[in-house]
Image (cartoon, rainbow, N blue to C red; front, side, top):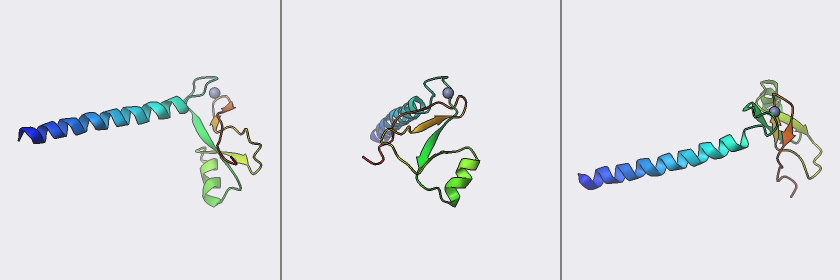
Length: 91
Ligand SMILES: [Zn+2]
């Protein structure tokens, strides 16, 4: 089945491109622009619930607090404490 193999090869190519784009985008976002560390966690705003508190204690997220100023950073570097990016919340 020649067509079958061709279809499979095409699917593999499309999948690898999609994965490369996804990984590339994630890697670009999750690097600290100050120190280059990959130890970057998202900042979560609002009143944290029990699950969010547990995630924060495990160092998976940073808590940004309840008050949004309109220019709030989206990412927190666990290595150098630098915060950057912008959330789209409140807009
Ligand atoms: Zn950093």
